Structures are given as C-alpha cells and as structure tokens.
Image 1: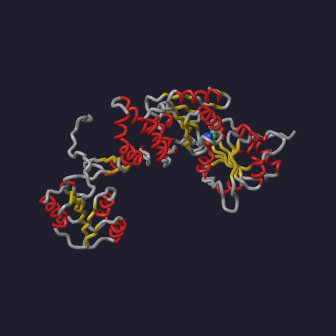
Image 2 (image 1 turned 90 degrees about the vertical axis):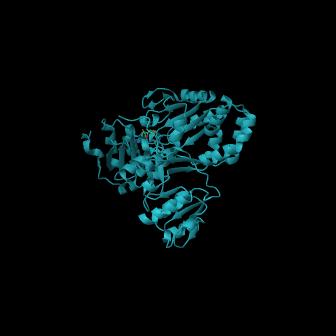
Image 3 (image 1 turned 90 degrees about the horizontal axis):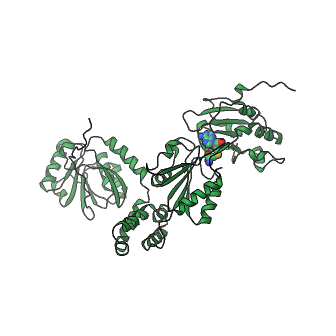
Length: 475
Ligand code: SAH
C-alpha cells in the first residue's frame, strides 16, 4: 500500500543569503562540494581549512571565497547564517555542530544526517528561479535523477525571462486588470513571444513583445514550430523539441514520426495525423499548409512534427512560405536526419580524411532524365552520397552512376529503420544495389549511403545486400 499523506520531516524553505555569510569548515572534497553548491548563491563564503587541498584552494581563489588557513576556532562561525561541518572527522564535526548551535546558527554535518539541522537539496538553478529536490537523505542518487529530469524540462533562458518578469511586475499591475486578464498575460509572457525571443537571446525584442502583450495591441497570436522528431528513436529528440511539445495545443505529425514522441505532448493536446506514406496521402500538402495557417490564426500553439530534420526532404519550404504569407510566427527546430542516424548505426564516417570531404543528400529521383544531375559528378569526385526514399529506384540509381563512371565496386551501406532496435544493416557494392528492390521484406524506411568513405564502416552487424540476389539468365 502506498501512503498518500505522509508528512515531511524536513520542510523546504528558501533562505535569504545575499550579503550574509556561510561558513564551511573542512579542507577536502566534501568541503569543495558544499562550496560549489553554496557558490551558486550570492552568499559570502568563508572556508576554514587549516591545510586546504589544492583543488579547494583553486576554487576559493577563482570564486573569491575567503579562505582561512588556520586551525578551526568557534569564533570563526560568528555572524554566519549557515554552517557546514565537513572535516571528515566525527568528533571534530560534532564540536563544530555544538558551537554553531550555541550561536543559534543552523548547521549541516556532511554525511551525518543525525547531526543536521537542515539538508542541502539537489538544485536546478535558473536564477532567480530555483527548483530544490530533497529526499531527507533517503537517496542522493534519486535526487540527482529527478534533478536531471527537471533540468531538461526547463529552458536555459528561463532565468533571464523570470528576471524580466520581475522587472515588469509593477507595470503589469498598473496596466493589466487583475484576474483572468492578468493570468492570461503571464501565461502568454512565459510561453509566447517574449519567451521565444528570450530563448534566442534577444532581450530587447522580448521586452518589446511583453510591452505589446501588456497593451493588448496584439491578441495572443498563434505560433507554429516546425520540429524535427529525429529518425525514430524517441531519445534522439532535442530538448527544445520536447519543451515545445509539452506546450503545444495541437500536434500535427507525419507517418514516420515515432508514437512515443507524439505522446510527449500534453494529455489534452489535439493530435492530428497528417502523415504521408508512399502511395497513401492522408492529406495533400496544400491541405496541410491551410490547416497550419488556420490553426495559427485561431491563436493555437501548433507543433508540426516531421521525421528526421524538418528541412531535409520534409516540404517545410512550402509550409514556411504559407506561414510567412499569412503573417503567422513560426520557428524551426532541427532534428537528427536519417542519414546521420544510419551512419551512426554503421559507425560510418560520412567524411573521411583524404577519402571523402563532401556529402550529398539526394532522393535519386532526379536521376530519371537524360542528363546526370550535378550530384552524380560529385559522387564521382568522391563525395559520400545519402539516398533518401531510394529503395524502389535502387537499380536506377546504381546503373546511372555506373554509366556515368562511378566504379561498380564503390562501397554501399543500407540501413532499414535506422536508430530503432529492429534496424537492419546491409552492405555491398554499387553493383549489388539493384537487388535491394527485390528485398520485399524491407517494409521500414531505408537509407542508402554510397561512397568510398563507406569502407570505413563497421560491418560486424551487417549482411550482404546481394545475399538473396536472384540468378538472372542472360537474354
Ligand atoms: N526529413 C526526413 C526525411 C524524410 S523523407 C529526415 O531528415 O530524415 C523519408 C525518407 O527518409 C525515407 O524514405 C528514408 O529514406 C529516410 N528515413 C527516414 N527515417 C529513416 C530511418 N529510421 N531509417 C532509414 N531511413 C529513414
């Protein structure tokens, strides 16, 4: 049974430390760890260390902490607001604890919870915003895990944004009526245009956007984020993508976007599959363009998820043009494109010193005409070629490149379902590539990489492309 109303034995508070001093007694690693923690605040730090370790001395010098190289004496605690006993010696720690208590100063003895008046939290610092995690000493590892999760959720720009908010509070109180209008203002401030400007370090634009919000010269306007969802593994998503997903009102996603990524949105966010799969378009591109524009006009925060990177064979160009024309604000969040995921699976250096120094992203579908497209010449000159959507035209790609002069022995790597646990890796040469079309068992997305750099890959987990090659009878 899980108890739901257990009481805390240690209650979290935020103590004012500005212009006050904190004393740490100790000369080793524990003292340094506490110094680093308290060093995140503006408290004056006094370290009492008879023979301080070099690393502690360095830290104190670099962070302008006062280092007292004397034996500990009780009067060195005078005037402190907090004391840490970190000598590593139980008896000495106990006497420091007694001295601090005699002076009415709360004290913490490192690694001796029974002697502590207070515990230090695991800290997520976005000054002036802080998230402190405490477990009453039950699990420092647990606290660090929680810390890491919260750290990922909060933008690095949150601190400056909160400072801006603090600076505006008085004006907002004058200009924006209390109640729902003011709540709406702050929501828009922290999740809308001011936050977006701050995210990229544009402080004066953020200020201007806040001023506009205050005067309601602009309604809370919609915003569209074109986001790369990565190649398939959900943890290849960027932190920025994850944050925007959690704020979205509507999430539009393509067929290849991993379900787990779509699930990261708020539970009440609307989710729309607009996914195109080869041969079955559930919505035309024009319909998708119209949809994101109209959602933006309704004031929605829209996330448009595309597999891989949104700017690589993602038709983002058309969506951005539609948004620009409609005057709806948008941003682009890059993602890990399939070629990079496939290369990683194969431990394949896409550029290789002395072998390949340029790279081509192509679909191969432009090889149909009579003239070889420019990238064909690049391939012949040694570029590494990544072919998207190329499975069904593998034979054509191979024969045109060979015709044009690329050696039939050029190395080729093929990855189906790159980055996913059930990925499959194949290797061979350009001459083997046509047999890819016969592999009807490949029903996931396929990436083909061609070029001499492929020879530098790791073939331990791959099988020959041509293993199932049909024997053709020459006519
Ligand atoms: N914007 C996407 C590409 C979309 S085009 C990106 O940047 O990755 C779709 C093509 O991408 C597929 O036909 C396939 O060639 C490739 N692709 C996408 N995900 C893939 C994966 N997990 N493994 C191999 N190829 C993939």
